[in-house]
Structures are given as structure tokens and as C-alpha cells.
Image (tube, rainbow, N blue to C red):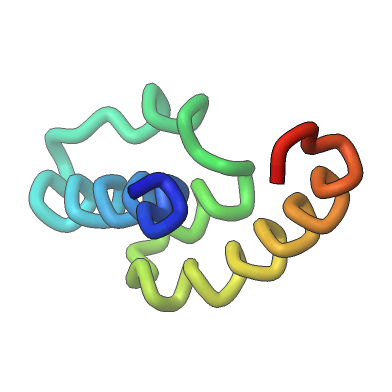
Length: 75
């Protein structure tokens, strides 16, 4: 269900899990291009939890959705 699936959160969960499971063996810099932005990437590098990062991401997503809404053809 695309309305229920939170793709950004899933990506953050994956990044946090990889960081936790492979702190020395995972080349994080290659993952940087897939992250939402540099701030989120730095938070993953610091070892913040997905919940901590989510508190920063949710307002960004809400702002994006607000700005995107007038351009949607089908609602």
C-alpha cells in the first residue's frame, strides 16, 4: 500500500541497521548519495537511532508534501 509505506523511513532504518551491524566494514560514503540530505547522513554516521532521525525528517516531508500538493493531477 503506497499510502502506508514510508519509503524515507525504510531507507533510514536500513542505513541505521547497516551502520550498527557493520560499523567498520560498511563504506558509508557510498550510501551518502541515497540519503535524504547531508544532515540526515551525518546523523546516521553519528549512530543516531531511526526514531531520533525521524523527528528531523518528518517536518521536511510535511513541507515537501505541502509544496507538492498544488501540482498533483490526481488526488
